[in-house]
Length: 411
Ligand SMILES: *Cc1c(COP(=O)(O)O)cnc(C)c1O
Image (cartoon, rainbow, N blue to C red; front, side):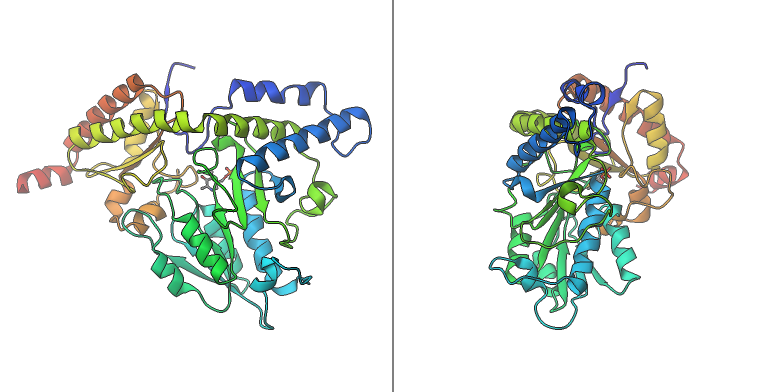
């Protein structure tokens, strides 16, 4: 393939060479089933447990609180559906510190979830599924920067609320949520707290104890790991049921032969991401700010979506007035630049982004957005080429826009 500039790291990342190298022996040599008693099976099992220990250490968790899944989407589905089931059917042992007991005390069934309007579809569509089955869901508004308002969260809490699910960082506009404060509020009220940390894990420091997180989703392919593997952190003592039924893998909670190479790759990627986090974030932040400054300074009628500082170090999201986002993307692609109009999942649909609508953008601006997400490998030269190209394309598209012509005549 020709040389191209990849600025869609929120959609997925390149699997790093060292991750591939760590995975390879688990395809070719140590291919034994991790449940087998022969030595190559034992080798697989040990590798899975090694990854579990590595990953647990990166978030201040215990190894037995990490459950491997097939990715962020599965982890989100599991957390919400199992939490909803647990409120009605689980039998509890009365242990001190067992949050589930508090979450379910009383005789009535708790049936209310609080989430936000800007969650990933893995959360939103699971909530819609649960609504059809009698669960009530409050979708919190966010402010103009895409940040949850704590006062609104507090007001939304009911005696029936059993779960708060708020993403750590938004995948479209990068906005960071007040996770510790939300965790504290949840804990005060005896409500479970889940966070979709798929964008944040490996990018930002996370400590599940300090942040009062009960359930957390993450995915390997967003941090230079392989696709199709993730984890759900489940706080100890929480009697969350299974989501995938079958064998006894993952301590009876997530059946299916372990994806040993994937899990090994995830462990390696997590280790690398956490070791390089500070340096990488600094590199990305400098280039991101340079990108934002240049675009806002040099291209008129442009806005930055999301908070100027409280955002992922690698995320920039712009709306260009009088420009259709999809057209801009296609033209950028023809020049070898990969960006996105928001989330990979909505590309191809004509609906404007639910996140941009939630921060109050009118339809036309929500259609005219461009998300650029950087990596450790992004260079200043790439950013310069990208800005120059966007500038040229935006000018050209505007010159063909009757609305823009109209607008210029009026000002
Ligand atoms: C990518 C993403 C997901 C989905 O993760 P997969 O591993 O691709 O299933 C969920 N939530 C957020 C915030 C994401 O960015």
